[in-house]
Structures are given as C-alpha cells and as structure tokens.
Image 1 (tube, helix red, strand yellow):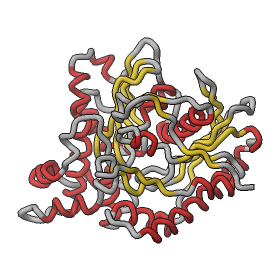
Image 2 (cartoon, helix red, strand yellow; image 1 turned 60 degrees about the vertical axis):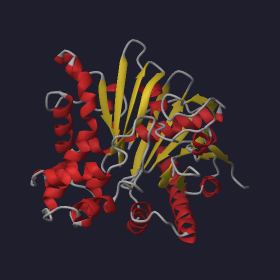
Image 3 (cartoon, one colour; image 1 turned 60 degrees about the horizontal axis):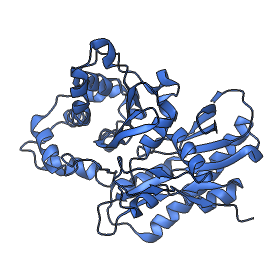
Length: 386
C-alpha cells in the first residue's frame, strides 16, 4: 500500500476493476480544480468463484440471462462495498472527509453502435452506497451514449488532468483488457479512442490453456512462432480494426470465441504457444500507427512524449514488440510513473476524478473523443438509504 501525509479534505475514492478482471484497484486522492494529492492505493484480489462468473458472463455470451446478470450485479456490489470499507480502514481515512466514491463497475456489454445503444457495467451503486455509507457515483458512460457518443474511452478526460503539460503534446496509451489512446496538450484533449484488444485475447487464451490468468512477461508467447495465416484471418474477421475514430469496443467482441473462430479457419491448427505469439503480435500491431509520429522525431524525443499504463505495461515481451513498432529503443518506453502516477493506479485515480467532476456538477465536452454532442454531466449519484 502507498501512503502519503496530507490534510484530509476533498478526498475522493476511485474504484476500478478492468476488463482483465485481475483485481479491484482502489485509490484515495485529494482533488482540487487544478491539482491533486495522491494519498493511498491498494489492490484487492477477486474471490476466484466470482472472478470466473464475471469472465464467463462478460466474454462467453452475447445473449445474457437477466436473472443471472442481476445476481452477479448484487454479488459484485457486495464485494465492492466490503473492500472499500477495508481500504478506508487500512488507510486510516475519516469517512467524513470523503466527498464521494467513483465506481466504474465491471463492463459486461458495450454496444454503442446497436440500434438501441448502451453500455452495461455491473456492481449496483446503491448497494455499494448502503454498505459504505458514502455517496457513490457510477454509470459514467450512459449519459455520453444518450448524447450520441460511444461512451468510451473516458480516459482522455483524466489523462489530461493527471498528466497535462501546458507546453507539450503528450500521449498516454492504456493497455488494459482493451487498449486506448489519449493525446492532449495541457488540459485540452486533442484526440482519444479505443485502439482494440489489449490484454484480453492473450489472457483469454492463457486461461483456456491452463497457463494462468495471464502470460507472465509474455514468456509463453516468446516460446512460440507467429502464424501468418492466423494473423491474416484475425485481421479479416476484425470489424473494429478499420473503423475510424470515434470508436470503442469491449470484451463482448474481443474474447475467446473471437480466437477460436479464427483458428477453425486455418488450414492446419496451430500449436497453442504459436497462437499466443500470434495474439501478442496482433495486439502489438494496434500501436504501429503511433510509431509513424515517432519516425519524424529525433531519437532523444521519441520516448518522452508518450507513456504507457495498465496491466499490459508489465508484459515485457509485449512492450518490447511495441517499442519496435514505435521506433523506440528497447527498454526506453516509459510508464506513467515518470509523470507521477504508477501505471497500475491511473484508471482508479481517473474515476476518482470523474466523481469529483460529477460532485461539483462540472460538465465535459467529449466531442473529440466519443463523438457526443454538447457538454455532459457524467455519472449517476447514489446516496445511502439511511
């Protein structure tokens, strides 16, 4: 756990459990209009049965059973509430100093381009509010979708707040289950969108083959060989690949079924480790176009304008391949830690910031990111029942 002394006021709690479903990340941060003070952070592991249920419901089925979704919605909310209370106790924060909790929830379906567009995150905010006794703000994506947007990514809003430098254009690439990019100058967002699969394909294949929840350092992928036939089939069936921004996607599109459908089209079934290597190369290829910007930069500047965050930043082989595609010397692609926030805490910190915006009724313009129209208040507020 990370802690720092601070005057306890304007405190916001951010809670994030990403598409990789590896852990629940919680941060406490003191937020002001133009700065923030990072207080503490901790990760909590999912109970294994709940994790498996979430993975099954979010990656294996496009048609969901309403009663099953409601049950897991309540189970996850109960877990969120308990770990938030545990975190606050460990951090020795007075609950009276907490303005609100920003709760992303667990994305189950993200379909902004459907006839009736929506994005579904489970983890009932009212239950969490009742368990913690705190104001809880969740469902950050629906208002943007109602305004004609994709509902994602929301990261550019908080990347620009956390890392904006008035003099320089900067870029953050988050490699979670889904990868997204934010480009900004100071607090002004220039562009942001989902790139495509981050860890989700590699993680799904690792679990399917009994390797583990993820391929540590990309070592299993490194033992295999890229299958060119498979990578061409993956590209051919990937409807998201050639879409132009604004665009967003989710694990209901990139999942185990996405992989198996492609394998079945191969003339000869590839070895599991070759599939993993191919999936890593396929994931890394999402970042190739960013390298075009780097080509025209002097070598010493290539690594300084961009930083990576998320679980994928810990995959050494993936990062090495991304560096090659970005024309950055191996070992020199920096994480957001050099800009003041550890890569594992960026998203949780971001949803604390979104809670700050909603609490203070500060609307945002996401037209350059999601394609929505006008300024929008993001998030629904839940207050304790008693």
